[in-house]
Image (tube, rainbow, N blue to C red; front, side, top):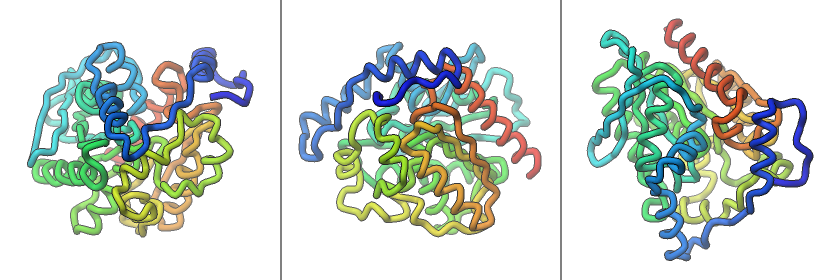
Length: 320
């Protein structure tokens, strides 16, 4: 992450994160046919080292470290895996639930990391959280992960009213969130009360301006991952690149966030405009100096983003 000076307009913690990130090497994913390379990457992603799990849980969800306590248990429905986390002080009368989908380039963030990130999000937002542990690369390209998400959403609708449900995710998880909502509508399912899209990747043709102007913040080229993920499907298919979907005014109220250094800022801005044109209530929040993933849960800006999401959800649920 080199090429531009570190801004003085952000917190000292955020400046430190940018300085550290600037020293990290950029490495592309293995080639789509590099079986050994992808399995090595998948093995690294499945690490259960506590420090690695904690760092990945923060990086793949937008969560922040907290002293708040939430219990977490594994769950499964029709072979789709997820975790259920409950804040310590949640009451039985509180029927709200957040279905959260982690990011991680459809490769990282599952297993032990999904367990921890679900726990953190529940504690951060203060509501019961169902955190997806969807199938990922290299063994499971599109639409396996999306199929898992729609399976769990259908199960959630059997036990909860749609007005008590919110769905959200970060990066690849935000991609799956938007795709899930389009698919749920197309399949005639009730839509939830709200959507949370943190730095959503919604146009895998990479046509947006900041794919170029903010390319200095990319951890590596995405071409190999995208080629493996799409598995022969066109990149502009709406369930792969939701920006190409048809949005209607019944799409749930949505909060979108990104950073001025985020290579997905254009994706976020373009989707926000498309939602507004469709008559959807949509809020856009852009964080100064923030790259993709904001500041990895380590800075005041990360805590402000989580607080913004929490206020948005509380307002939507209260207004329902």
